Length: 143
Image (cartoon, helix red, strand yellow):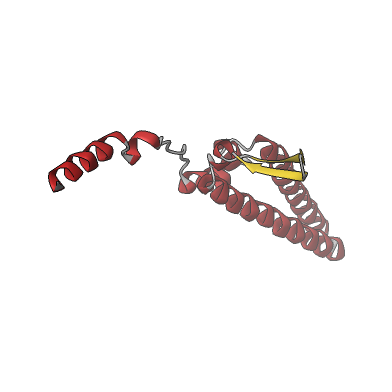
């Protein structure tokens, strides 16, 4: 009698193995280190690497524009210094430092965003959340 249970158990174990019903889909991966490095070296590079193009459209002009204003204020400070105008030189140096501070802030933000986006890459392609009217009110689904 135990032999019959053994054979029936063996049959069901072979037919209904979990590997038969589970599809093993691996998520695409992006290297967080590469994303951070690209974001540091190229304005918006980490966002382009992680395929967040709309973020790159916002970050590139911010980094380039703030960098340009920093350079412009530096040149104006040098010009005021050669002219002997210490008041304007100090004013332009302060503005240059402020622009450099904001440029560094945008770069650090861009690097952090690229790092997180690289870790989360592929999740937005696998999970979807939908909400809408249903039979008994509001219906939510994750698929």
